[in-house]
Length: 262
Image 1 (cartoon, rainbow, N blue to C red):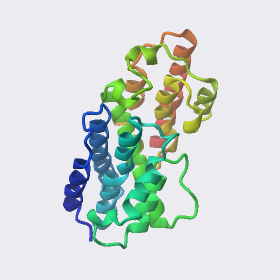
Image 2 (image 1 turned 135 degrees about the vertical axis):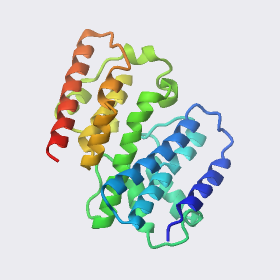
Image 3 (image 1 turned 180 degrees about the horizontal axis):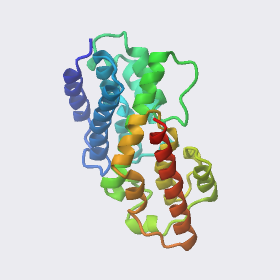
Image 4 (image 1 turned 90 degrees about the horizontal axis):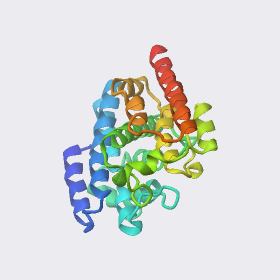
């Protein structure tokens, strides 16, 4: 049995242990967590899953980034190259039984564990059973959806602490050739290939090539996320500006094709 309200209370208790709540990125990740849980529930509902799987999807959303808070405590930054927050979050939950604070029943443990570990990988690992694969896809889409929202709404210094301190850092940045070529070829960007501030931004746009469900593409389209994210900055370099316009066309065309093929 999944008691999602009990899990939310347990999550608040979990957050209370951290003293550095004033860190610029702490609240961002709290808000992100609740949005991802909401997104996961919405996707599961639109997929017409049963009530148990809808609640399971929401629970995974609530727990997916639990390793981020320890990352902020230890490193004072968000850096997925240096710190595998998904794997660390899985260990936090399952090595010492912390998962039981959020759900008493252990029948969903392997699904939750695998979904959390897979949510931020470049690709989902092979060999998962059908239900685990489904929930891994749901959390990946739910997480990416809120990454669009974060980049639209949050302060730039909160999104990239220690890396980007002001809007001008992004506007004066160049886009590396490798990241640009990856997007042109309609693939997600490997986090290890990101070098410039703009590489990190374009990485979010490229998430579009890894969405799993038609319902997710429709949400991206309804919110006009691609245009809004690209238009957040004025690109000072002429070649970079041209590249961003090309990316706009490629990604939007890709979304329209996905929706029209529904």
